[in-house]
Length: 193
Image (cartoon, rainbow, N blue to C red; front, side, top):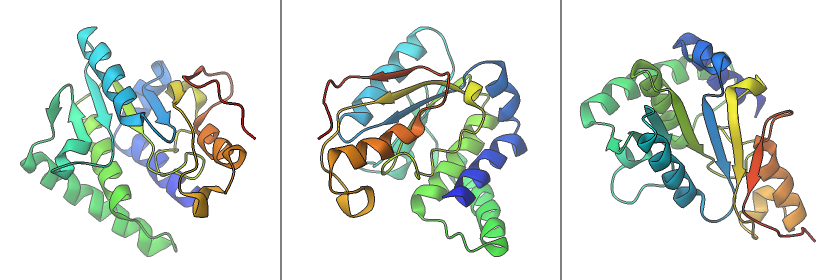
């Protein structure tokens, strides 16, 4: 929703990520039905090998929510998660008090991740969408120059109650992460029907 997008966009400015974002694309945004996590991991590994300080936000986790927030190959520590999680929770509660927007667990972790990546001075962030793309909480990038590249993996019928019953409707939601004038890569040659 627009309120979520504004909240996360404003969070970038509050924690000073906006300057780095404007200097060059600081986000790689990945959407799709299958393969998002593998694509994020592959991108992360290559960027780390190139010497960049890379923050990665993915979901879901297998064993611990700490798996969703990493710098390089290191999971966020329990202490750091507690610290940035508390800051994120306070910011979200303040936003909820001012509007009818209600944050879910995913939103809280995303806010914590953005705060963490900013305070740890990540050079680039690889982000995986939760559900969809167009209305996903990770789709907060307002200035197209903040997006290095959008990546869309394969599509199939998934979350049809929210995204629609056809591949065409689902594709519209996933394509919502794309920004005018910025590159988009897809691994699929599917033709929506």
